[in-house]
Image: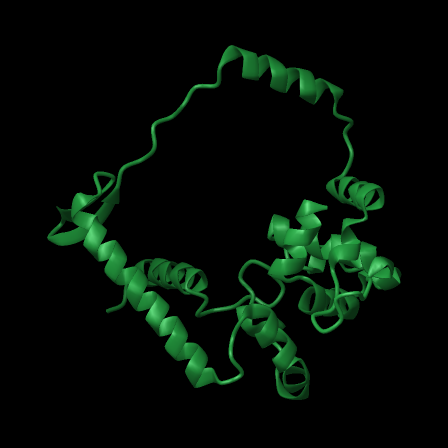
Length: 213
């Protein structure tokens, strides 16, 4: 005999676990969608492969890249294992017959009264505006979007893509994905242009230059 109520709760528990492991996807939800949906494939990947690999510092050979990453992982694992016995903030304890890694939490530091007063004074003077408006204003004042250039053309400018770049930065920084920012009636916020801007201009070196600016 099957207990239907228990069976339902079992299904719900397995469903939740599958969503967390990304083994199951919900097409209309950003958080639990297929992480591979934004990957390039076919002709689009072959056309962008050299540029993307160069910007990430990877070889065009997948075997060479995997070997390099395996070496880095092995070195990191050995360093962590060697330092574990002398690390007072990490220990292994037995729990229900299993070994669990326990990390000591950081001590909480209370804010000094002067910092509290300063934060209140600053907050009282800040205007209440939307985050995109702030980023667009900073872009207009500093011109940091000009630092996002092509990989192969260091002098190339992307001033006309300022709105698209700001939208991509907000999507990445807030971890909300592109969907909430797509506007088909605004050319700079169309899905194709946002995706292209993210793939071509958002790199470690351009982010560092923009931050410095």
